[in-house]
Image (cartoon, rainbow, N blue to C red):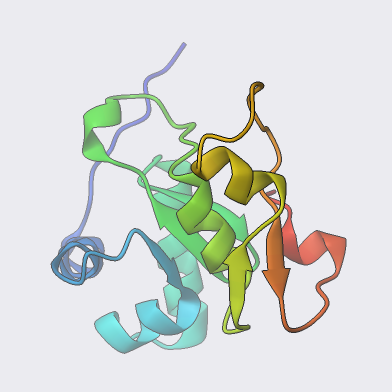
Amino acid sequence: MTAHLRTIGPRMAQLLNALYDRSQTTFTLLDVKEITGLEPALASSLLNKAIRRGLITRLKGGVYMVNPAELGSTVEYGGNPYLIARSLAGDAPCYLGYATAMEIHRMVTQPQFVIFIAATRRFAKSDCERD
């Protein structure tokens, strides 16, 4: 089994440093373009290479998550499901609700494996599922 090399170039270092400075673990393609100044095609190429190296995870089209360096050669990272849920909702006003809220407040006796979001607009199922 070959280990994934977590090497980064100057653009990826610029992106990761800016995201860490913002305390931003999830980000969009728009954030990448803003931080790096790259055109959309080059920004996408940068992200695809970072995904292959295990530096980031694609949550859905245009939404990504930084994988912590502490993972070593592991490329699968679940992250904080509540922060990911918020990122997947995009700019729609929303809150964690139903069984998810009950779990946060320790009002359930069994673990919840699905995160429920209440939002002001309807999402297609594909909008909220991780690839």
